[in-house]
Amino acid sequence: MKYEDVYNVLRDHERFSSKRHPRVVGIAPPLVLISDDPPRHSRFRRLVNKTFTLKRIEALTPWITSIADELLDEAGHGEIEIVERYTIPLPVKVIARLLGIPGDDYEIFKHWSDAFLSLVSMDNDQRMANIQEMMGYFGKIAAARRAQGAEDLITALVEAEVEGEKLEEWEILGFCMLLLIAGNETTTNLMGNMFNLLAARPQLWQQLRNDRSLIESVIEETLRYESPVHRLGRTATTEVEFSGVRIPAGDLVTVYFAAANRDPAEFPDPDEFRLDRDLRNHVGFGMGIHYCLGAPLARAEAKVSLNAFLDRFSTIKPGEAPAVRQTLTPLLFGFERLPLVLEH
Ligand code: HEM
Image (cartoon, rainbow, N blue to C red; front, side):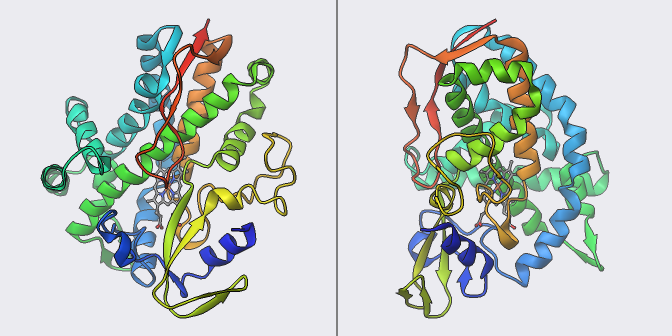
């Protein structure tokens, strides 16, 4: 798939629907918002845009920094398996905090989040039981926040109103679940891919230690070069001729974000990791009406993390133990295990 093809599909939500194709419904149950088309998508997005604001993310940044420091204090130095010690716990803790999950409940929250993603390692009944338990829990918090608001996203969702419209209960619970699914493993993968690329580039590490203004470019180039979301699906609503290919109505169309990000017509020398490119148009966060709602949060987490690692470690190298890419799903690209040698 060329960049242009991906661009055109993502812009054309009338002919390429985000409703789950029957062939993938069994594997990936429909989710609110991300599996919706207009007008329902537009209404929902308007309401959640009101709650998922830049201001809220900025307010969270000092807290993200303290979690990063805490995790790194616990991890020490030398060879560290950073997926288990850092890149998994950080995003889960951040989303728990954002939603207003009390600190003590974090472990169970992490367990539910894993259960949803355990398509292979857990049987369906067990997974469903976990999801029901999680929905019940979110339901209780929503009820409590209706009675008395707090400084969290669930309160904002309960109170959100656009032109007299409010979110319904099932929408609020479905959205909380979507944040778990869309916001955790993706961010884990971005950070793992980024630290792995830097471990192979010792000079760049030194350069970054002296010049933090390059951090944003490292994050954006990682999103392009090793996109954490490789591909997602759409369904053709009518027969359509596309780049010389006839696609029958109802067919599943796979959109390769990662291929678009390596198209030489859009990114010259696409297989080189370079910080001097124009990265404004990469599609690592998608494009069009479904453009990633959590992009500012993912960027903030990656930035805080890279700064925290740079502050603490003078060198970063691949570990002795082998790094292992995740193979649970072909949709995502990241690490299951990433041992790195980090020295003060
Ligand atoms: C590096 C990390 C992330 C990557 C690479 C990523 C990637 C994406 C992509 C490619 C889409 C478009 C889906 C489509 O077109 O069908 C998307 C949508 C979405 N993402 Fe992210 N995401 C990341 C982090 C997050 C975080 C941290 C959150 C929230 C906490 C989040 C929430 C969402 C939501 C709610 C949508 C659906 C938006 C809509 O349908 O209107 N994402 N993301």
